[in-house]
Image (cartoon, rainbow, N blue to C red; front, side, top):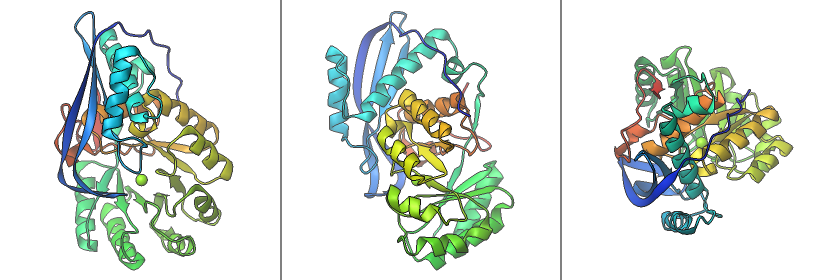
Length: 336
Ligand SMILES: [Mg+2]
């Protein structure tokens, strides 16, 4: 079930600032389109008549969003100049709605999640991404995530041979006891091999597997015989993609990234559509700064989308951030 939001008064915006910010990662990040060590995002700041300011983040990422940081910045400057809607830039839309909501929450002197959905929790459990090239390394990283308080760990697979993934996942399962284990293949398995792989993983009690194969049609074929629930993530960039995933029965779970989907309100609409179609919703980050992670965390709480745990434990990957770092403590984010 996805919670409905209360209607908000639009804030009284008196000043708008658009700033380019470079985020640097502690170690190089491997994405679907190569490796990055830093990345430009755009921060939108809205100031009201009382001098309060709300901030939103536009965080484009190749393969997840259609626009570049330059295009997002131009869209935000046009919006600032004449109110032009940022068509073609979902990350600019995310920055605008994020900043408006942040400002509204500050004006109301309430946390955003509570403003959107009164009584929603201020504590958001988050999954931990576990990396490790060998079974021992992966098991040690998973054990330490669980010791820190995470109840869900996520492991990336399909970058190498399946046998190596299987060995790592067996070691992780042994290391984490009854904590949950989810995996993400980023579309990396061939459609004829994926069913065999999923069959061999069936005993590991995997919560879900993200994108075992590439594309909504292929996912639908694989899901029909999968012993493990499937999740769509990068195959869904727009509401139309989501509708298609629902009509094809491509997935059991939908991973929604507010930074890529057009922000908190667009993501809430997608979450409601998915939930009404019987899909489980998981809110995750786009490896953006803590402005964007914060907006996503408040959204996840307000939606009631906290189980499965959101994938929002990514601020620790950043060496330079655009806000006080929103890091988990004991496996949860604290929002108040
Ligand atoms: Mg994913």
